[in-house]
Length: 277
DNA sequence: CATTTCACCTGGTGGC
DNA sequence: TGCCACCAGGTGAAAT
Image: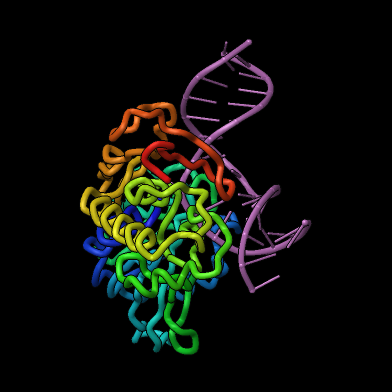
């Protein structure tokens, strides 16, 4: 489901609704897949802590938690949620019907409930105490903050396709399949161009296109391609702005040439053979 | 090391 | 209706 704009939208929505609230009880499902930290550890550690903020880092949702001063948990901590392809982080009432594939439920002091639902189980839940471990940091650069020179340096000497490079989370954190295709279209670049063969001018066009696309997508609440909804159950609207993604065979909105679909880095890739060089 | 391929999962869709 | 192939917003391990 989620790339940077969707994760940003969800993190903001969850933050608004849980900030200051205290986790009083937890429930974790029996599947082991979604848990980077064991369910038992998460259950023990989360209870009694309060949500300070909820923020996006790359495609991760980082819930910053207070210490639990009534118990033995004297250090602050983080609960890190990665949504994978189909994960959702919901804030509900306890009475709301529990959907299939619900893997975690946190009951809050206010009576609200935070739920993690993920049919395909590509998502991950992780707990980090901040006594020894550092706070979570994405390995890659933040696409909305990186500047011209640093952006260019990311691709120096990289022989892979520019599309593959954009998807590599250790280079840039947060870009996924939709926004890679959409930014390459807006920059007029073919997805299979070798990253190290792009000129400084082309790379700057790409950086600006990426910023533009990500910012407008955040403004529209992300892209709802299937059933994605934010923490308040609201769909995003950036899918209406897609110019190439999942428009195979349809006319390019600029030149009417049919949009092509190819496979790059194992992912379906859409581009206009006329507008992108 | 850098790069590519594939397995990990469930569910929806479209063809026959 | 059923069966099957193929597709899906991600990523990390294994192979090259």
